[in-house]
Amino acid sequence: MERTSSAVWRGAGTDGAGSLSTQSGAFRDQPYSFQTRFGSEDGKAGTNPEELIAAALAGCFTMAVSFALTGAGHTPEELRTKAHVKIERIDNAFTITGIRLELDGHVPGITPAAFQELAQKAKAECPVSRALASVPITLEARLT
Image (tube, rainbow, N blue to C red):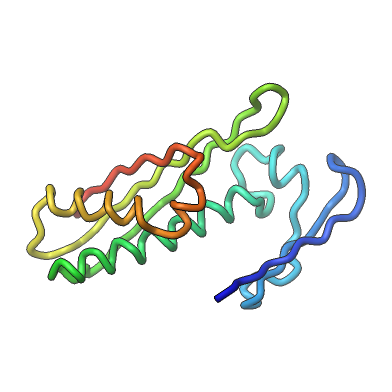
């Protein structure tokens, strides 16, 4: 299996602009730029690669948690994950320095300890987490 996305960029790094598209069509010519990536403190000016990494990890991890819980006999009613990708300037280069996952789960009949154990296992085994292994990923998992 292989999935693809593409990027087009025109112009210089700081004042140029580009677009991102996905194979599925969920993103088609989605604009991005230096401003949407580094200048918009609230992150609402447009998308950026780090936001897409956060979405990919949140989606992959949440599905992995669902599989782990269901395999242990605890089908979740709802799982919600937020992924926070931190980017900092280190040695004059922007660097992803950490990712924090926040998982809230409504899972009848499971103990908090079992929920924590299965969530940590899913974090370690999800394909996107494994691809991002060079970045520290922390997890806060709560039952609701």
